[in-house]
Length: 285
Image (cartoon, rainbow, N blue to C red):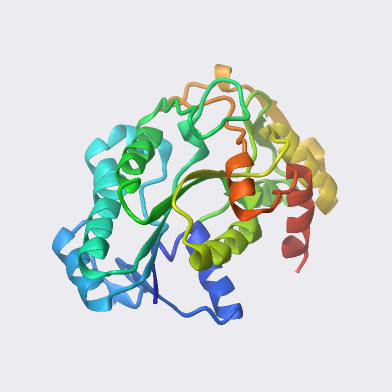
């Protein structure tokens, strides 16, 4: 049985829908509106549920993802991003002979010039440091960590994706500032769901990048996205990370080298421009 944490978040809502459409059975665990409701910060609750539910696959989408909030609240950051998944891993190993754990990490573990291979970690904020910390523990279990970034039409009522924000701003004729000097290579939600469906069958272990090929700046992404959806790109305004005083440091180049995962799965990830094209239909429904 598959158990999902963080199922009401940006990625989780879409994954639940994907699983339902593909007749993949799953259960959810979290604070509210889940099959098993409770505080995941409560180690005893987590341990008890893992023991009694006995999932053979655990997909962890829970965590504190606000970069500035992570910088301000180290206790909560490490409780959710490091301690919680470690508690799950220990409980799985103790109670399940056969288990598999899928952890979602971030492209923010990288800095300097990309595309980055998995060995090239350089976390510069507490969010990315917490993700690297749990990865150090994951390698001792039947688990995989996916360093990634994603976009697409959100199914969450209270969380917007990066592309959602661009779509809403430009469709409502409001300006949106995008960085001209921050590079990334995200994948669409649809690609993430497809890879998860492969992993739950193959149980691949280790740490892997999962991104599109031929990344671009966030400003270039916004322009390409508007071109595909026939939106007015004049509302995209250029900005520079160097000129913005953000609370937590951000990396300028998070582009991912996908060679390791491509070889492992015997596939090739699309270029980012094609990922944008593949997302177009979701916004036009």
